[in-house]
Image 1 (cartoon, protein in one colour):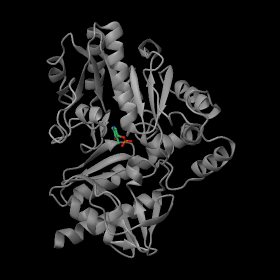
Image 2 (cartoon, rainbow, N blue to C red; image 1 turned 30 degrees about the vertical axis):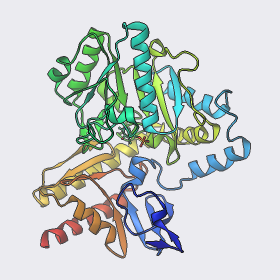
Image 3 (spheres, rainbow, N blue to C red; image 1 turned 45 degrees about the horizontal axis):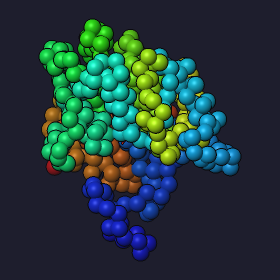
Length: 397
Ligand SMILES: *Cc1c(COP(=O)(O)O)cnc(C)c1O
């Protein structure tokens, strides 16, 4: 495909992309180069927590870019100190390391756990992670992930990640030996198809970790920053993790992620961890404006109200078409179909006119919904109405 004489093939071919180019975004809406509008329930993969180009992000970018963009990570800067303090105040953690992507934050969590094992646990280094989990696309985080098929793409795999089953506490216990240093999981497995861990499982993991002197690491790259109806998902499990990673929503669309840890775990020596862009004032200023927008009870209440409304609507559709229900936490939800039509629905939804709808199918029998956290009730109603029509069209085929 050509776009204004520019070739899309100049981009490395790493995924199947539809033949359209997006030019503009506002709130829950995207507009392509032909002027067609799309209701967006992907939002950059649960990234744009305040929608497309929200005033908070736009203002922070323009104001901070005039003041200071990057003095280097070797010096303190105001927005990074402010954002770190706000995150510490809002969580059970004591210190923050900023990074640029979820995978990079998880790499940091893995390094921190291994260093802690070296210092405090006779060199223990193995990390128990979950089958079907997703922790990123670097070599270490791919090895940590339990995504089917990922064990053989870029051999050799990084050693030291052993897999248990989500919500299967016995499978975790079986793996524990003297070399294990940590347990790492997503409170809700996102890429696997929105599968929440049970409260009992999470609490048992905390107990087992305490009993065996292990660290509990929660990967909240997708579930953090209000996505599940509380600022962080771990807060709904009544547990205190040792390490947490954030990504996606924390930047409201720009590249920012964070590694948070309790004081006793922070064993990095100078030089162990760093990065050219890490904690730069431009991105942390955006993070601060995003956190300020969502970290208040009114905003969080509206997320819960919206997610109840979305959940009810999806469950009505499931009943109407005899599907297998809906699930999720907050505004991270999935509709479980009774067929493998999810990719066909995604395609038809995008191509339908005059208004398109953007959905995601992480599995062939499953649709995932991750709208902006400030999506309106009307936009949810419109999405549900469009979805209902699409499903009935697909069934008639
Ligand atoms: C998206 C995601 C990541 C990876 O984040 P990137 O910014 O793409 O590196 C890691 N963990 C979870 C749970 C995610 O959803």
